[in-house]
Image (tube, rainbow, N blue to C red; front, side, top):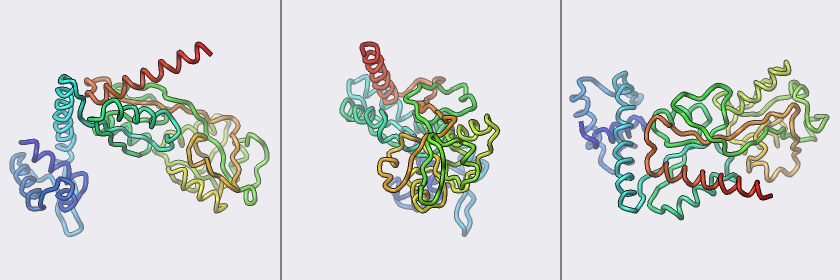
Length: 303
């Protein structure tokens, strides 16, 4: 079982297409097909169901996939480690985010990463909190920035708070009449609500605060992208409930933004696995974050 075969298998599994996998790996489709077939002969069972409608992983394929990903990641981590030992840090940092972090410390940290370690490639994946946690656990991501979930994080995950924020209500005052500033959460029960999907920790946070005061919030329009939430609000379809720091709220001509009462506060946290040795690119990123945080703490003490 060689690494090239595993690389091709993972590409097909993620693309669910031999053609796209071949393009991704910069080889011909017969090459991809031949390597996957050889791998299937080696493990003794089919890894993909092939039909006229497309391909899908078999039980065997789903079993092999996490092992294949870990093997490929281990090789990349080893390369990065020895580059670091030679004094030139190389490799890739795979980081996930739920979006809306353009005006936070994350772009600043990634920019410093580029200047300090130009040999490290940075790959950013966007998703909601629950899938990002799973990708960190699977080793598909080195780290992720998520909203802190209500339930405890998995035991293998370490978290560090990056910043705090709160949800706000965004609406067209010509269409939606909401009294109060801040807007009582109870007043939103009679409105069409635009907010995050159930896989988002922000959605859970909203529902938990509402339940705490005996209110049920029904989300009628679901979108993780705050730009789309704002577009719905601009069309007068309802009230968007979104993160107050999201850059999509920078230009809200004609719309009103108000805080919510009781406040729906949340933390954005950086998560990574502590049960395995961090790869060299992740160690470099964490060091930048710790230095940045220590500097802010010093400024606060002298203020």
